[in-house]
Length: 144
Ligand SMILES: [Ca+2]
Ligand SMILES: [Ca+2]
Image (tube, rainbow, N blue to C red; front, side, top):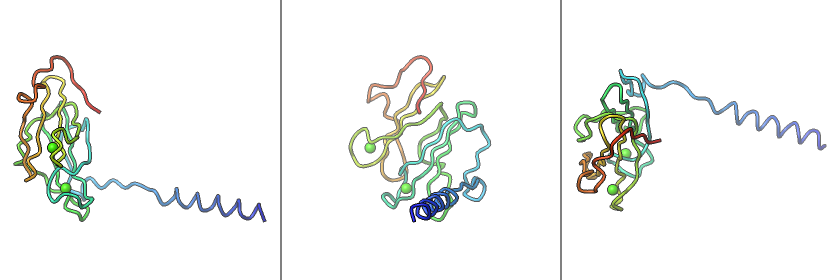
């Protein structure tokens, strides 16, 4: 009896791991970028908020461009060109620095300094690094 239960448990664990596969959906999701990707994160940056569809921020210091994609909720993304976030970097970090309920973006860069983009809640973000006192950070900056 114990041997049968053990075999069933092993089979269930094996089926669970077998069901967790990843497929490359870059092309079908609309998130192709021509530059070498250096860092990326998923977060609820663009409206609508709170629906569980995290948006994508991908960046590279080598390409000097940032790729912001809003999640369409159907497995595809739309690139956001008018968000106000215009430059690449070594990485972005997200958090709600001003506690207004909208996730903001902090950009680190190898050569371009740091930027703090405050989320306006309407699909745009504003660089407030100067007002927040974090504009000039000499040297290489990197985020996770
Ligand atoms: Ca969203
Ligand atoms: Ca905020």
